Length: 224
Image (cartoon, rainbow, N blue to C red):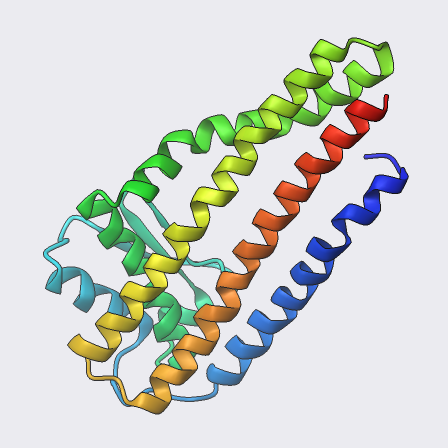
């Protein structure tokens, strides 16, 4: 928002975020060239796993772009990107299985996911307002307003922290399904694990950035 010496605090998160982004793109590109012996496209795999889990009410939709895959718990729709929907690559199947893992979490009431979904609207709202209140509070000398900004941003930090177990568990479920239910070969599972591990680091980087931003806000408030 403005420069001050506390920006140095964010450097570890910035470096981790850069490394994670490069890593996930590199791993996905590498294993997108490796066809899986399972013999299914991403969309076919998604439907197979969902029906095997008894989740007949979850829809599957194609989505433009690459690595835009996600599960929407509000509408019970798994949206798969162009890079995974029709692909039978190891990378695509790993990403698809991960997103189906979220659908299974939702169906089973996985507690961290329930908490994340509950606070998601509040976290988005608070994240948008936090810096506005914080900066206005600093500029006007209204310390209470700056404190409110810190409190609001803390909700966004909590959301980032809760996201980690949700994402790691979805990857764990994906690997278990591919290994036990579909008997994916060990060398292919190694590729899936590489892709999902790289993707998980983007969430770690986001969480670290949020935490360090909160620390920075507190330091600025105390200094002023």
